[in-house]
Image 1 (cartoon, rainbow, N blue to C red):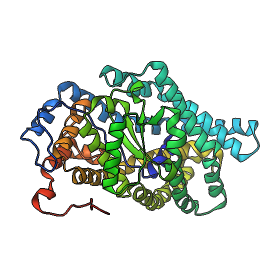
Image 2 (tube, rainbow, N blue to C red; image 1 turned 30 degrees about the horizontal axis):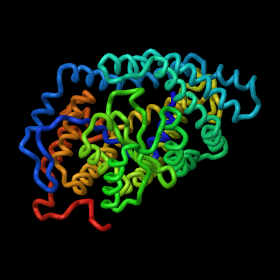
Image 3 (cartoon, helix red, strand yellow; image 1 turned 90 degrees about the vertical axis):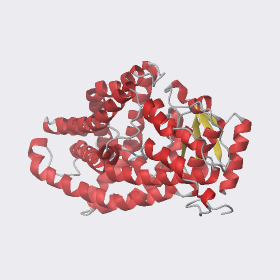
Image 4 (cartoon, rainbow, N blue to C red; image 1 turned 180 degrees about the horizontal axis):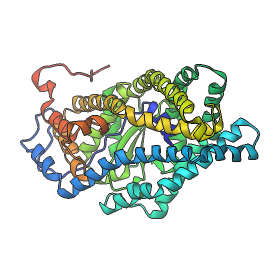
Length: 431
């Protein structure tokens, strides 16, 4: 339904967050000393209970089912002739191509919302409540569900990204090349406006209230050579019981965000380790590297869209009721193909994300020298997020945007070059 808007945010290169959880510990973290003798790996595996496994299996299934359902809905709209009827309605209501595309986009969004609502309700609301991971009321969830749809229609139709794309399709033989070039400014724009415009629609952000913790975070930032940045807390407790933190934006919109659930449930040294990870994203320029990588990948992506969409119209245009890609009736086709290509390319984007997260994990260890806090931070991930710490290799390859919990705990326990007289990989004091 909102696959293009989601695609633009994905292209922005914003690193995935470090999802973390607190765990009671009998060991004491000693700065610069190897971790206490505690069998973290055994605890991690013990935390993957039958209940957690059942939840994880459902999540894996949904990761395949949801995009396939979105593709099937698009095919249904096309082969029933509904896309052509949407175009006819738009032609009766408006004369400008921009308004016609906006109407078709709105109608397709409404149809998709209705047809996928049971799956969305189960995936985002019922399943999370069943396993005790959500605290949000149905009314609150429904409000967010509708807001997501409105945000997608606004940024794609009103702004108007779709109208500009269709102008290129109509006027340029190699329209895919122009769309690929446009990936860079659109990605930069998405990164810039998400913290300022989109995120506040769903939650309230305010400066970190704990002044002692804020002082320690700023001291850590100074050690990392990062200028004082805004550190915010967000009221995610109204929606979830899970923990998280992330960095996003750049320039005036750049911020580090801590979920209030994380602040309430984690120990101070664990929070600082999470912050060190997020500072690693900033210091290692992951946002900009992600934007560059997505821009380069955009050329292949839109070329494939160009090839497949032209073949599809030649093959099925008579059945669908349109024969030109610049016809507004083709919009459901284009959105469905983008959904398909995003799904197919997910292993590549997840592989890039895992590499980025690996670097941030290493940076956090190097700047804190706190292996114990790192291990404790990762330990409860298997339990608190009910994820499989050691998934099958093919699932990791296709679905995991972060290293597995087993990999992260292994690293936290074994990586300490400062104890071995070896140089750091990423953190350079004074730089």
